[in-house]
Length: 259
Ligand SMILES: Cc1cc2nc3c(=O)[nH]c(=O)nc-3n(C[C@H](O)[C@H](O)[C@H](O)COP(=O)(O)O)c2cc1C
Image (cartoon, rainbow, N blue to C red; front, side):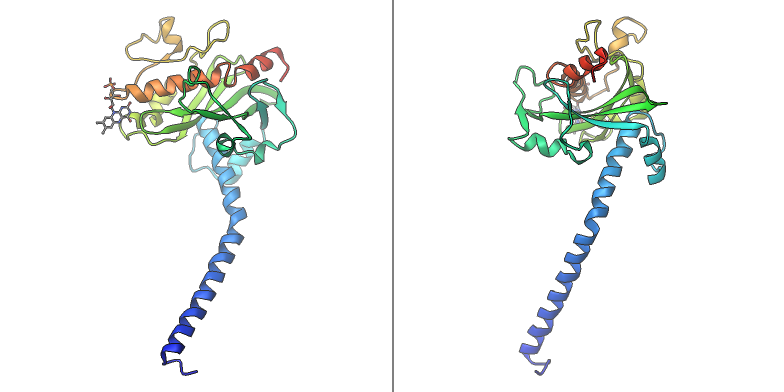
C-alpha cells in the first residue's frame, strides 16, 4: 500500500490510535493497585494529621505506616454499637456505602443535624493504642457547611468526652471564611473541649464571645468571623455523629468495656 495515498494515511492513523489505546489501557490497569494504595495512605495521613498524631503533612509513607502500627481499625454497626466482623474494615468504603440502598439508611429529618440525608449502616472506628491499651478513639465525621460537605476526623480521649484532636481533610468552604476551619489556631482550640454532658448527650457548641474559662466555654469553640453557617455546620455535624443516631451506641458499649 502506498502510504502517501489517503488509504495509507487512514491506516497509519488507525494503527497509531490502536497502539496508543493499548499503551494507555495497560498503564491504567498496571497503575491501579498503586493508586489504591496511595488512596489508603492518604486517608491514614489525613487521619493522623486531624487527630494530632502527626505534625508534618509531608511525612513519608514509612513514618505514616509506623504510627499506624499502633492504630487498630474496626467496623461498627452504628445502630447497635457492636463490631462487624464479616467485613474487612480496610476494604470498607463508607462514602460508597452511604449511596448504596442496600448498605445505607435514611436519616430522619428531625435527627439529621449534619444534613447528610443518608448514612452508611456501618462506620469505621480507629483505636489508638499505647503498649496495647487504647488511649484514644478516632471517629470519621462529615456534614454540611455552607457550600459543601466537610469530611474530617475527631479524636476523643478514652473517656469519650474529651477532644484530643479534630480537623477536616476535605471541604469546599470559602478560603479565608469558612475555610478557616483548617486554620491551625482554630483547630488547636478544640483540644481539651468536652463534647457531651454527664449523661453523654452531645453538646458541642461553636459560638462567638464565650469566655473559654467559663462552664459554657468548656464545650464551646470560638465561631469564625463571617462564617456563622460553616461554624454551625461543624457544631451540628459533630453533635449528630456523637449522638444516638451516630456513634452514640458504640461509645456507650466502649465505656462499658464491651467494644
Ligand atoms: C463570597 C462569600 C463567601 C462566603 N463564604 C462563607 C463560608 O464559607 N462560610 C460561612 O459561614 N459564610 C460564608 N459567607 C457569609 C454568609 O453568607 C453569611 O453572611 C455568614 O455566614 C454570616 O456570618 P457572620 O454572622 O459571622 O458574619 C460568605 C459570603 C460571601 C459573600
